Image (cartoon, rainbow, N blue to C red; front, top):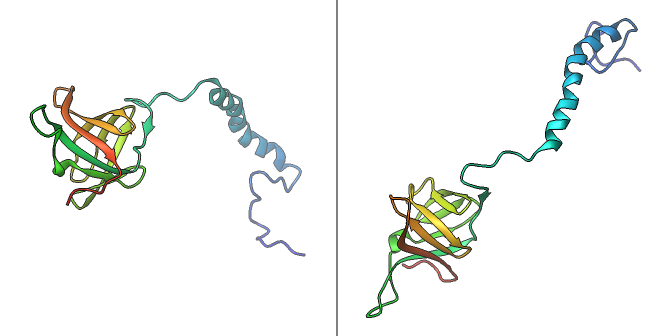
Length: 152
């Protein structure tokens, strides 16, 4: 059986077709091989650095209905349908008939694209969010994961 490459073609780096070529190939490989122990030490020595804001996470899929709190003389809450949204996958949401993306780092949810772009929420629990106001504090607006569909 004959070779499928031209006889003048160089062999791949890991093959040593002629006796005299092995020394030259080893000289080319040696600097790379010297880095391997250092790379292995780095891999096993420490965890990767933390992500600013905390570990990246995802929200539970479903409808989040948003409202302002009520008072003792009236309804428990006042719906804010413009901010209702539905988490559809690990980084996407739908609101106002449009798709957008979100980023959850630690307990801070940031709407990065779409209708709600720029809004930030504090995840108080798996099913409860509070809007973060411009001053960085939790505001009165709350969003709750529910089994119901979005309001019409």
